[in-house]
Image (cartoon, rainbow, N blue to C red; front, side):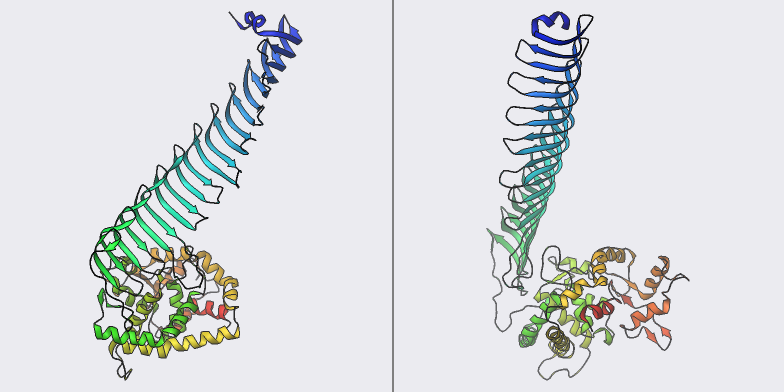
Length: 552
């Protein structure tokens, strides 16, 4: 039985054009079921453009092919929902937009067989703007996508069966937390980094944020991981259901250390007691700690100048950019500036040697191994304890061979004390003068300076380039995998390779050497040049930047 034989059985009435006894042209059909059609017909079939209305009032207006809604059209339902887009055999397929008034939601993207398939954006706005943008499969989130929740929280990453799965990043804006890593069944599983950001009342109340990097199981810290506390303390070891459990190492923000077993988040063994007269426990010779007398003398120097040292630390932390993770701890870049301002390089101490003097302490330290392998990384963070420990080593490097430095201290304490009085306090005094002369304008002018803006935009790329081109030297730390530097000679060759020293260029080799010679004693001596000096990433540029940013 064909469609024409069925016509009297399903059609109640027809008004319109005919051709050879068939519905052909524009017409109006009323079906026995209560449905209706008005539009173009060809040889008795709904074909072309028309509107089909169901008896409940729902409608489809658009293209038809041989009695089937196929092409582009619009569905309108009585509950206020509407679809506008491509249709195949009566089902949403292709590109289209669906608006659901009752749920105040909409979807715009790809469809297949009536379900969301491919790339698309689903938007909700019940309690606030929220939605999902990404991949779909048969109406569920699957693939890569970004979900914005009504609370403002955001997840971007992998999805499977409508839940977070694979690699992704979740930002909880309502509680200032973030997780980036692997997910499974909607929970952190595998390797990931979780950050608990701290709202600081006092600017340097906490130098950093609480941060965990390591293994996860069903949303809990489980396995091996490193927890960095906002105070600067750090734990590395085994975890079980969010608690330190098993073998681990803990270092407090003042250098006290425990290595051993943990059970249910507590140390099994004893932890060194805090001593008011010796609050800091410094490493002085690679991974070894100072002797009791050395420690007492060095702490005495620290306590005598702690107010000025702390202010100096904070002043230089305020200079330049803040790290993306919101850390207020000093970066190596800021430490370099202090060392330059302290005129240590005029004493023949290159920045690379000062970097090494501190990084050498970590040759056997598993907690801070990155400092050994990346001794010249500009964004390495230093809490106050690290800052003091680095200055002790730099003092030994600068004045370790000098005699009669102090009548009160000997050894490392004497060289550290001399560094403070001879280099750091004069720099601190100059900083205070600048602050009084232009209170509040130093950072503003620094940030607005065009050269500094360019440095911030490209310094990460420059450091990557520096690492690629730098090479190991005879002075490199023997256990370090990243202690690579450039010499002035290599730097000149690089400029030449990049075309900066062409005959048509205004830049000449003597001008380049003069930049280094103005800051590194021994580079130039009456027309004779020593081009084997090692230089760090930012060597040679600080003075020009500093002159502009500080109005000197």
